[in-house]
Image (cartoon, rainbow, N blue to C red; front, side, top):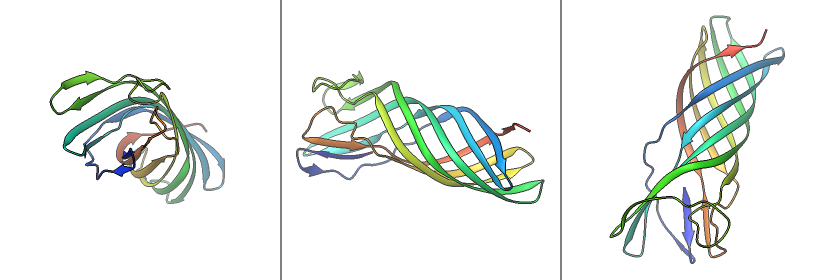
Amino acid sequence: MTIKAKGLGSKPETPMGVHFGSNYEIPLMRNFSFLTGFLFSSKGSDFKIDTVDFSLTPTYMEIPVNIVYNFGSKATKISLFAGPYSACAIGGYKIVSGSGFKYLAFGADENNDLKYFDVGFNFGVGVNIKGFVISAQYGIGLVNLSPTDDSKIRNKVIGISISSLKKNK
């Protein structure tokens, strides 16, 4: 996450997260396909503002919508993909130095920690070996997740995935 609160930026640290779910690829035309899915994703950041340490770890149900360009042999394919995603927060936690663990509150008013909905853009590369896929991607959130006007919070995610792929023939 990138975080700017009250005009002050912070250098966030990126904690490890997890994502899992199901992807589905639909061939469109030679070398191109449509890839979507339904993913559980944890995102977040550790950061410091003034002398206070924070950790935010929201979890989302995410739907990526990617266009994929595949090339290579039948057994091994390289994929380049890009497209938007939409995500809805379903939970998460925060840790603030001095006050401990609390569940995140989602909503659009200033008493909440983050807004519910995130929209962004993913791009990446993958290797498909007989339906076993290893991919790396970068996702950048386009929505300000802060419920207040004096802060800006956006997701930025580097992801490495291992999956199997179901294809519609």
